[in-house]
Image 1 (tube, rainbow, N blue to C red):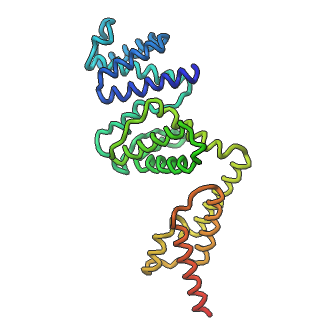
Image 2 (cartoon, helix red, strand yellow; image 1 turned 180 degrees about the horizontal axis):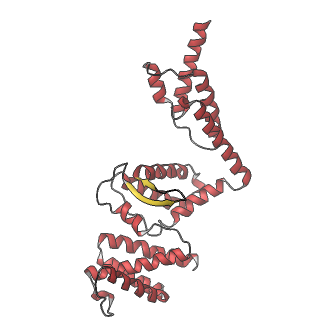
Length: 296
């Protein structure tokens, strides 16, 4: 299926999902009608999935009738079958979008979010044991905030409507996870999030030399922060602890690690924060000067 049809399908899918979770029957019916109009060749698959949904709910499927004459649970079962049909089309075409479960969890939570809430769990199987990876609210918040920082530093003349829409979606996720009011993302906006974030990364790492450069810098920064653990992070808590006499950092190692890793980070085009590195560098430089003066 071509990209244009897949994007149209996703627009229907998102509209259908929001209507289903809001129990908006008029919009549910409108989205089914739109799906039938645009994708008449998928009716047989849809009928098969609807029968499965009715069977799972131990209900007898109704005889064919107009979509306008059904409501309540019967309409919901039809929507569930239609959503499954669309999801199978996405899977066949390897088209990534927000799943029904994702939309329900993010935009229609049953309770207020807390940072430790688990949003998603996926099992990991290996030869020795079965483990699982979890996505917590705090993890997704970190990703959303970092993505926003990356997108918002793009030059205004380079920003497209897709990038602006992606920023809107990421802002809505950030607000939703912080239990604040948000505007529902536009149907057309959700599908572009993954592709925009991927393209931004690819554009900044277009060739192998760039990738090797960034990888090497990452390894060096990681080595430096492990070599002198007190240089990791913003450095402000370490300065507070040093002033209050709760810790005794090696000023020479911290200075070397902080300055070198800061330069490497800046060369990679990343932000060092508004004041953190400068505070610790200044504090350790002052400590070093005092130590040298006392020695002399």
